[in-house]
Length: 240
Image (cartoon, rainbow, N blue to C red; front, side, top):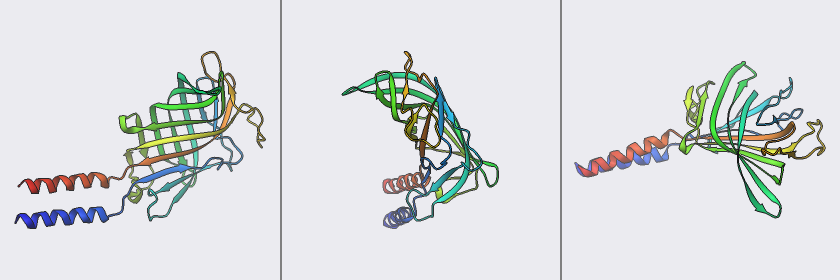
């Protein structure tokens, strides 16, 4: 009887391991809206630039590089993010890492249906801009690892279990924005005018700035919890 239970437990574990991992990736590419900047900032915060009728963002949904096809939603992107200066790190050679604690929210509305797809709020993310003393350069990044909490993500689109997206609250493992072409000109088309941004004595930008950005968020697979449960069942059987 003991051997039979062990074999059954092992078979269940093997079946679970053979099942596809249903993790998900959400992302958009830098400069997908080719007639608008992704972000516009001033002072202690930044938000999504107003996009014209042809400047929507393509939100991609993927199953963690699995066998399912990548899905694409044409969306309106909105964001409102605030920053608080956290300190500088001297990188040497005149380069400074300007670091900030960032909090805020962003969302995506499906253009085809006018329905909200995704809303995200977060606190205590890390925003870092590389630059010189008293200035940002042309690149920056915002990142959050949700191992200690601080991210709330709600999917209100269609049920996509193969991509770990079910209507309601979902768990974000990590998310981030990569900013590039930071500038104070806002020119379109852009030819490198006004690169970077100057800083006030409080280390906040001293003028309106613009940037392109790309985005990615990783959603863990619920199947991982099932594996832990099966492992516990196997251990219980062995103890008996």
